[in-house]
Length: 107
Image (tube, rainbow, N blue to C red; front, side, top):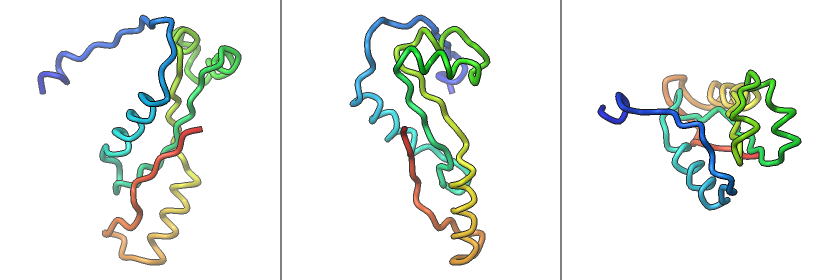
């Protein structure tokens, strides 16, 4: 509980790359978090290039950290995955039983 109550947001970024190893570790840990029915119905868009961060900035309400951070992770609700999972679950199992394993997607 202490971590939740004392958490801070720091928006000063070092001018260095974030390794693929670290990103993969973060994705692995994030996939273990609880979601509705443990379905992980989201996709993650990884953006590193300055040009693409500039284009992506409006989707992040033009917050300056989008352009300043070495890498930007955009978490998107994946409605296609939601539809596919819901259809699959309804046709194969009772609704109260989760039928799909956690998944993640990085682009």
